Amino acid sequence: MSRQEALQILDEWVKSPNLKKHMLAVATSMEFYSKKFSADSDKWWVVGLLHDMDYEKYPNPNRDESGHPYKAAEFLKDKLDKESLDAIMGHAEFTHTHVHQRAARPTGGRGGPPRHPRPDGPHG
Image 1 (tube, rainbow, N blue to C red):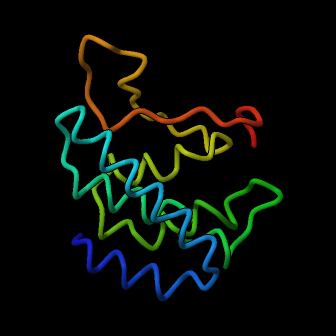
Image 2 (cartoon, rainbow, N blue to C red; image 1 turned 135 degrees about the vertical axis):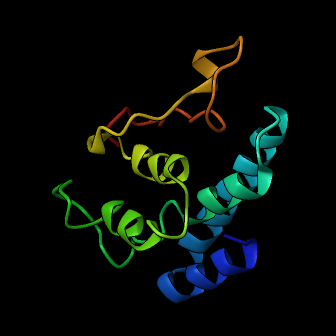
Image 3 (cartoon, rainbow, N blue to C red; image 1 turned 120 degrees about the vertical axis):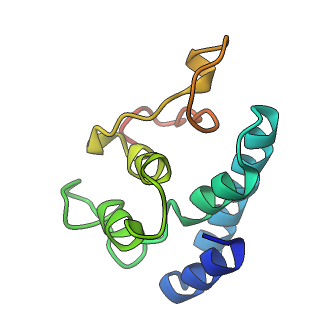
């Protein structure tokens, strides 16, 4: 998926200016780390941009399959590869989706940029 296509999805799904700023900030961070780890910067920018695309429309206070991030993954399943979908699902730890973490494998490994710890714990 191109950056332009991802931005169109962002505009269709997200109305909150603050959520858009957050998603753009995550995209920029993912791009930075992907370059640092010699990964595909366009791919990881798109993943960072779209990771919360369903948060506003489908909040998920019960942490079940009826909302965020499941709805995003469902919408994107034919548009992104498995690694990208796993990264989107895996940023919500309650999905129990395995995500490779380069930070945990300093001598190499596969996958995308490292995930960042959450300040309010693993379930925040």
